[in-house]
Every structure is written in C-alpha cells, then in structure tokens.
Length: 374
Image (tube, rainbow, N blue to C red; front, top):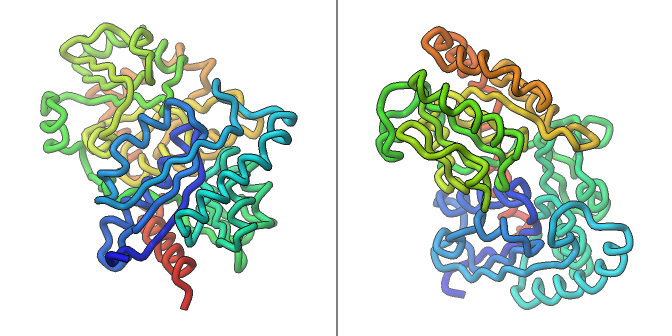
C-alpha cells in the first residue's frame, strides 16, 4: 500500500462552488501531519470546461496520489439544472458508472460537495455500503442535500439554519465551511502579497471575483468604472471568467483583467476590498482572510441563498443588489479612497470571529474516522 492509507471520493462539479470546498479539504489533508496522505482520489464531475480551470494542477497538488476524474452526464453541457426527463433517463446509468469507479478505486468515503453530480455518485456509494457525507455550506440547503440527506451517514453544515428543524443532531453537524490553510488572516493588506503580484506597494487594491465563470453584471460595472478607479489611484485585478476577457476594460498600468485567478489566497491577502458574488466558498475565504467585501448576490436563485450567505458576514460585507450596482459607483470610490480607510478597518474588525478557523481540520478528522473506523 506504499503507506498511503486514505482512499477518498468527491462528487461535485459544474461550478467552482461545488469544487473549491473539496480542494480546501485536500489542502488540509496535505498540510496536516496528523492525517494519513491519500492513496487515491476519485472525483466525480459534470464534464464542463470550468472544471479544468478550478482543478488545474490537482495531481501535482496531491503529491503523487492516484486521481481518477469521472464525468457523470447528469447536468446539461451548457449548464443549469437538468430537466426531470434527463435526470430520470440518466440517473441509473450514471450511478452504475459511479459504482464501477468506486469499486475500482476501493474508495472508503464519498463526500458530496453539491450539484446534481452528487446524486448518482451518492446512490452508488450507498449501494456499496460506502459512507456518504454531504457538505452543505450555503445558508439555504441545496437540492442535492435535500435529496441525499436520508442516505447520508453524516451531513456537515456551515449554518445551523440548514439543519432539519434548525438544530444539529448526531448526523447533522454544524462545522462551518472548509477553507484551505493557504488562506491566512491579515490585519492589513499584505506587502509581500502585493510584491508577489507585481503591484505597487501603496494605494488601495480592488479585487473583483465574479465566481469561477465570471459575472456579466460585475464585468460591465467594472469596465465602465475602471478609468475612474485608476485615475483615483486604485489598483484593480478583475477576474472576468474563462473566455470573457472582452467583457473587461483594456489593460492599463493600474487595471489587470484575468480570465481565472489561481492565486486567490494571495489576491485576498493583498486586497483592500473585494467586489464579488455571494457564493459560499468565496465568502468563507473572504471571511477567513478578513478582507471587506461588497457582495452582489446572483439575483435569479429562487431561494436567494447568496443574500443569506452574505448576511453571515455581518458588518464585514455590504450587500448591493445587481439592479442597484450602477448607482453605487461613487460610494465604491469613496470607500476605496483615503476617507474610506476607517470604514474598511471597521469591516475587517467585524470579520474577525465570523468564520470558524478549524472547520477543514475537524472535517478531515471525521473523514479519517469514517475511512478507518476503530
């Protein structure tokens, strides 16, 4: 067995929010000497292109563990929720594919990270007697959690409100959202981080994160505002999303558009303010570093869970509705200017105790216990 004892499986794809928590757990396993290293990892995905960006370098990150990426054709290639007909016709065949992959790898635990890919993988794990764990980090439970919870050995929640009846019990545990140990809290924007990013050491930095696929509304707002931001001395790093560079402004000395940001820990450490969507993973990382945020929730989710996610950051975040964003340009400039320094400091202070620092370590300990029961 070459000393590698843990054989894990993850199910989650389609968006960065369904993959980044898994990467946080893997980073914790790799960084903590008390955890056995991985022998193998099966990652069930949707087959969408964004997964290549988010999981770039995964094999090297795991130091030689065997990685099997398995695409389960449940979600439409173009994204979005599958129709009932597509789900019914593909669920059983994809569950059988997942079952074969789990048996081939000898997986000890399956972690469902969210999204429809979790459904066939979860059914396969249950049929093999493999413990199924669900991770629910949004402030409103997703459909995958609601569907698979009766089959799960444990469900890990970031918020008590998503537990049945709003309370934890033996199976439903409130543990927080896992954040990679690469995200380190800073009390002020980090000069070493700025140097590594080849930024000027002085002057405020705005980091724009529209999610792993970017956000058209944020891109349009920043594109129009970029000349004023740069003229006022603000530096901007703008993640526009894969294939969306045309939605950003033209690169200048103070404005840098990128398709996808692989060094988010460094970006957040260097930032004075983040303009972002309200994805749970992004906000957990924002809270872990302690960087103030303007959150523009995605407006088309029926349960408005991104607004609830942002509310969990308290006074450390300001929620701006997408339809109001254009009218907030002056307020954003004021907050980033010299007169906004005290307000930014108060927002940082408000974030100090809102994100449990030990969530990933506690969850990895539970994975270890489930994989190798006494």
